[in-house]
Length: 519
Image (tube, rainbow, N blue to C red):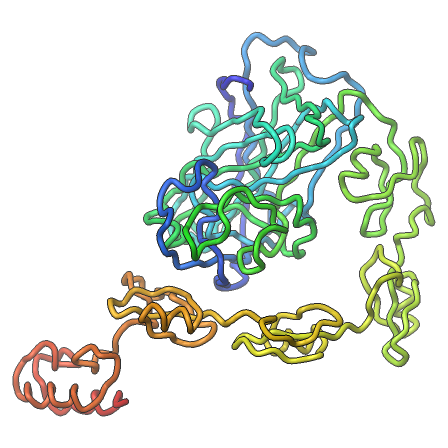
């Protein structure tokens, strides 16, 4: 492993932002995705309030924080890889890194790692990593945030490979991530100058894969056990995913915190290995610029979106494209992938056409880069509703309109297909967990219904849904004759329990409030 060396700060710029797009959308997952170490530095084995916290935001400018190691003793031209090789950019995200919309993963905890793997050809190795980038953002932060971070490089994947480089911010030569209050973002861009003798050289460990990850070493303000309470979104910065939907689930990684039986699966997990309720909704906004040591001639590459680009074979395959051969060039008809399946509602039939031709002919254009082969124009299947019921067959659109989850074309409602609904469950001591109704009953908790949450909007440390009505004088969870008896017994006094409106006297005003909450 390359030893740590002093770093020289090159440049920093915060992006300007516009208002965040939406409130936090909560589903089931550990608020702490990963601990990056031995299965959780705290909270292991506890029963968590399992939530994934995603907050969409919009940015208007390109943020960047660029840092480069300043290894002493190197002369210009030393180190690095043989000159003349074209740089290649590998990424799984559709984000532009020039502003736009991002999803802040606001449940990400200290020592968790977001990582992406890139599989190339054997001829691309050894390669030099020139630049690593990832967008971090805040959402409606009320304070200036300082985040300590690390960049980690593996030969292979996190589960079958070896860490070969780790660089951590120190606040002196390699700056911590500092962001101003509000909704802002920064591209943490790490590079090594080409003339530096100590380059990041990655060898092929037999898998033809390398992995790059970002770890949050220390939040600005984590405050509590992340298995129970997500790091406060108003005082921390978090990594982001894109808004284009998850396109590469097997190449996006998380190291998950061990939060016990009710948390997400612990350890290194591909997104494809995670249950849907624990899985981020998009790809990590991360990219890597690298240079092969043994150059290949570029050629025409037909990318999955139907466009043509001049890339090496390794770069083309790494982005899911089809390589036309070294020395080939892109022409108007080079890629047959500039077509789509065109579906006609009147017949239910499909014809492979260019998207513009499909629309002109009155069809519905499917995904660019696909043909009609194996494509289902009008799928129907089972739909799992929020209350656990199953309906169908229905279309994906009909299912979504009912708040359901489409189970796939041709699926049918069968016993056990739809999971039991989850909801807030209030324990007698006021503690709250998101459980199924059966789990709540078994634990002696009061289930509040499907889709309810343990949110604490008033910030008093107790789930809002579990807070007792002030008219429930005996705290048994219902306002009835027992409470009325307590109030009448304290009539005309300043009894604090029976003084519902806290005006210093138990009187008709308190009686009115109690009767209004009756039952």
